Length: 431
Image (cartoon, rainbow, N blue to C red; front, side, top):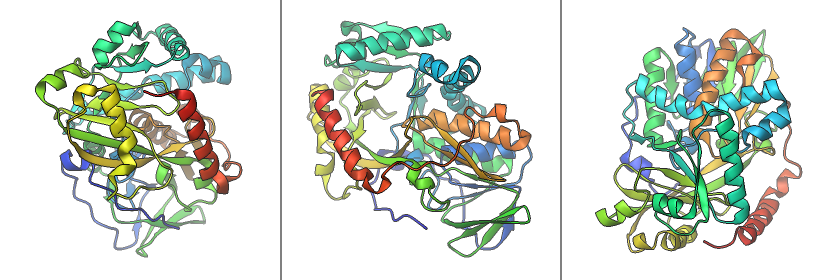
């Protein structure tokens, strides 16, 4: 089963990314030690770290490198997870909880360290991530997060109203907090950089090669492609996240593949540019339907947030009008700057807002659930999956593999997700 994807308007990232490495579709049967399905952050990171250990890896990608969320996200590298350290420790206990906290804490380092190690052509800046608080409750949340991460040795800092206004360039927040570990990257360039590094280590990447069937016989997996070719391997690692289809039964029903909408302006005039995020931070706020924004390496303002559940018509700019209105309200100094790009991508959200690992059959390992923090989280996950595949040590994994459990009433997901979004819009309040 293969998903149908609507054509999307050209994104800022596609227009400014480093060239993609050379790849070709798979045109004949092949063998490997491990087949990785999906050439996003997790699949490419897994392939890179396996190949560096001498494992023969073939990556199968249905479209092109970074086609999914890895090439269409906001490029914010935010350490941690949706759940704070105190919540993870309470839920999982001291030992397992701390392992998950440590895993999440190292996710931003994993990205920037790989870029530096492999000399990737990736515009990036690491000046910290700011979360603005728009209500007193969100301000209390910011204070808790500062306490939590300070207890983990992070130099997190609470911001008052004046300081957050100075650092963001808007007076719409009561305060917030800053995590110095965060930063921003050109996300498609990063995906392509991971692919180049994986190829240099010995991994083989085939784009334009959808995997259409998985089967296992006598201890060997066979991945059949839509083109008819097969790859045989001892192990398969499935890393398709928000673009998961029916390749493995019920898997796509374990996530809500919500759309994250984004737009980018033309390069800001210098005076306006100096007034917005003047110290190079990236930011997303504490709303349930969060807004996230940053400047790219060319001085464009990028604004992102949730949109309709269905794919928008790329010829209809009205689908992004809610974000254009936000730009004018948050940053009135940029209100007259033309919008140059509009695009969106799927985010894989699980029921508990945690990454899920599944091992439904011997030799098949599945990662799913990026929660909107996929740049760092999925890079780090690829490192963990590679270590687990090589060593067999479950301690290498941040969470234990679990059974595949679809969302209840999955067929009605659009209705209840739309209802939740409508509720959040009312409770979040205006900008």
